[in-house]
Length: 433
Image 1 (cartoon, rainbow, N blue to C red):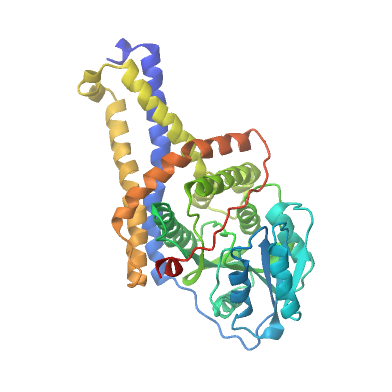
Image 2: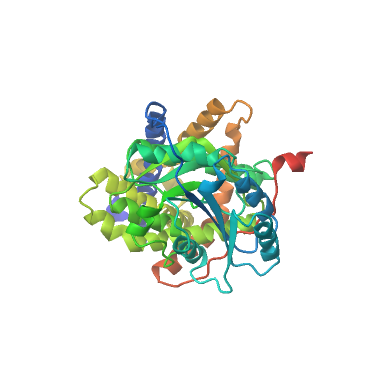
């Protein structure tokens, strides 16, 4: 039968099958991570006692955040931690009036808060964090994005875990959200965050896989950052870049899903697209920067290397899906409709595409269903419905073209500025009252 097909028809079928297999690998991995993530319940690290609290420098990179910076600073000021053992460094690149707000806090708390104002955004967020690193000397460094509101017990909950192992470079809390019920967009994104936190991060920590520092809600060991060359600004994903450099050099991490650090979800689709564009490009840049080191690393198993490459190439699923969608359109143009009811199943393409497609379409229910189960088990007061899974395909379709363009630009080595995600200061409770 296959010899009766034209060259164009065979080419499209081969391409469609190849793309289905590639996307199927991602889908299978989502299911695998869901299974592995359940192991963390029995793999919680012990909490050592601390006789004397170490010094901590809280680094807050800020750029035009007047809507949210006040609540961030107030939450950091209220940390339940010895005031003589921590400081707050605000690295401010603003030009919209945010500077006046942070300066007022510095005047009110001169012994606690120091503002470093930069007239140029050299290196963007990575450049700001590197300058703060050079101008502080504390044992540990806590990092928060402007829209996050860490709880007052955050530092005391996180710091003890560094004393389990001198090679722990960072401790990551679970990112949560302040405005998940604002719109269908925030409902969808919040479920995406839950999948990342309850499945992806938990699985990677449980299986000792290379993980991604989320860019906020974490504490670093200063010595670890310095040992791998500090923060670098040659990618748009400085958090992933540092994570990879640390772990490839033998440093470890701890993930604490029970410690929550909530932040604002992009409430508008336009803002979400812009954020995803930056992440897609940044991840791809990190892939280009680190894939050779991952493969050559003698301290990693074959499975760890595979998972590291999958993580670095997470966003590649967008161009693969985009091309697969185009192939699907071509299939219906170059084949008669009755082909798909009869001859298609006699070819090897038919069963292969069908079986793998079943995995692809079921994987979101496994991945995000696990996240929903874990969240509902952990917090009975904040349950999530399974129907929110159906919001996610819309986000994927909406961001598909933009993320594909971002990946292609990264592969073509085209640089672009670090465009911040605009924050409104929305909180569900305030909106509902």
